[in-house]
Length: 192
Image 1 (tube, one colour):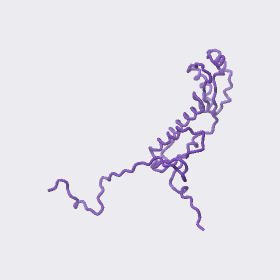
Image 2 (cartoon, rainbow, N blue to C red):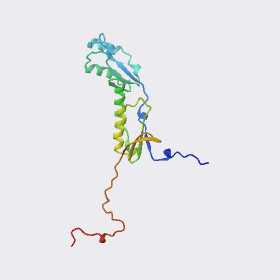
Image 3 (cartoon, one colour):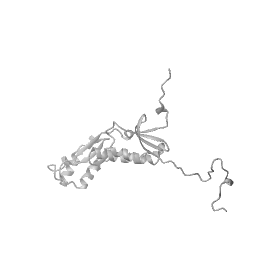
Image 4 (cartoon, rainbow, N blue to C red):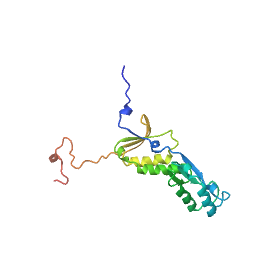
């Protein structure tokens, strides 16, 4: 009986898994309306007192997304003050919701990625099944990989959707000769 060979695993296809970029740290949405008077008004003295009294250590090594759930007008310095408290505590801090933080995280991670490992190879961007990866990360990875890869696909190596292939350069090399014809046998333009 013949043994079954996994030709996909033996092939040259590289799998790029965006989920591997995520650091598995929790994302916390911090609603700063709790720091406001009646959840609606930022009074500097009271705001600073709330910030000073808050236990910031609870966000240790987490990603924190700052937002305000009320219609309060929060000046920029209010977010900045909270961000300064989280600086040495949280892994990262941004303004927005959890999805905004993930997008920002992936932009930074993809910009820092060493793409040379995918130079001139067929690449499958692994898809499906990970809710942590925002769709924009797939688009950004596509753009980055097109600069280096030979071919780009989506899905799994055994069943992928082709997306892009580098165009082949069909221009002749400078010293190329026609096969079977010697240079002196070629007609010269404008020869009489």
